[in-house]
Structure formats: structure tokens, C-alpha cells
Image (tube, rainbow, N blue to C red; front, side, top):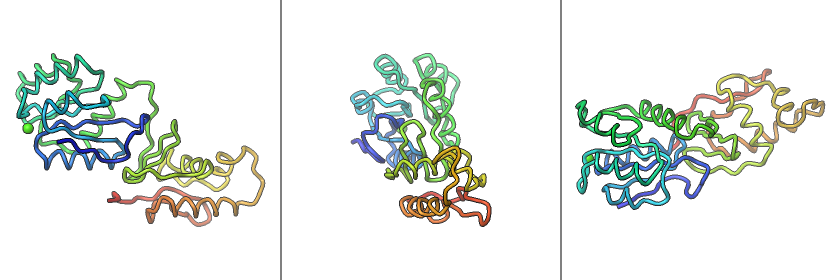
Length: 234
Ligand code: CA
């Protein structure tokens, strides 16, 4: 069985393959990954992992699989793919960790673990294995990719005009900081914008409507705008 969640077929987004035979754990990992802006899919057997196309950027590998020992699978995956491999397992003994790392795993996480730690480790292995890629700007359910100029909310693509993207990029580059109207106008329009700032309100309203997350784009009266704290979007 394979499941696919989140926006599909985006070659510029990072993909994570969850190899896990516990459907509950696989499901919660998939949801957490998609919420964090990754494309995520899962395989519940070693065979499914080995035949998965296209090759993912990161593999989260459970060692206890029904059809093959996870260490052996790690070795086979390493031979045929340049994906970063993070072993995720209940087997925390040093011997298992050493064997997995020797067979090509990039990192090792012992269950139970928190999603925040897992996401940090994924970012860390991606920094090592995909060093040229720029960081995604993430804020709650919002993910802004400055390179591809793509935006997702809760893993769903949001189509923005170039101006709307530039405005959002200004805010997402430093979430929480109040960005003045003038700053946004200078960056999204022109270095010397002297026109009416009303035009910004029109774009801001459209941007709010398209993102569809109440509280995400905050107006700070008399000062400017900022990204507000919002919970995950489901
Ligand atoms: Ca297992």
C-alpha cells in the first residue's frame, strides 16, 4: 500500500518517503510533514520503498519491517539512491545505530520522538545533502519558496500574482516583525515609490482572501503589516 498526500509533482519541493508499517504512525508523520511543507508519501514494506518512484530527497526508515530487515534495506537504498536516510526506530541499542550508520544512514532517531525534532533533523540532513537549495520560509501553515516563488498553505498550493508574492515574501522573510508600508512598497514595486499607498491595501486584501487564514496577515495600525501567530490549518 502506498499513500500520497499533499501537492503532487512539484519537482522543486522536497519529498519525504516514510517507510513504516504502523499505519497510525505513518499517517501522523505524513500529516506533520505535509503541514511543514514537504511532499510526503509512504510505503509500508521494504519492497514498496525500493520500488518507489521518483526517488525521494529524504527517506524516514523504520527498521522493523515485515518483509526485510531495515539495516539490509538501508544498504540497498543507499546503493541505488542519493536520498538522505534517517533511520526511525524503536531499536535504540548502540549496535543497531552503528550498523545503520555504517550501511549509509545519515541520521538515527529513536522512538518515541517529537515531530519538531524530526523536522529539525530533516532540515539538517537536507542542508548537508542538498546544500545549494535555499531555505523555505515557513510560518505556521504557510510555506514560501523564494526560488520557485511558490506558496502553500497547509500543503495546498496558493496561486498568487507576482506583486502578491513579493508582498508576502517581504513579510515571510522575517515573520513577526512589523514591516512598514513604505518598506513593502519599495521592495515590491520600486526603490523610489512615491505613489498612493492605497494600491497596497488592494493587493493586501486579495492576498488575505487567497491565503484564507484569518489572522495570518495582521495590520498593525499606523505602522504596517506582519505575519500573525496562527495554528495549523487542516
Ligand atoms: Ca515497524
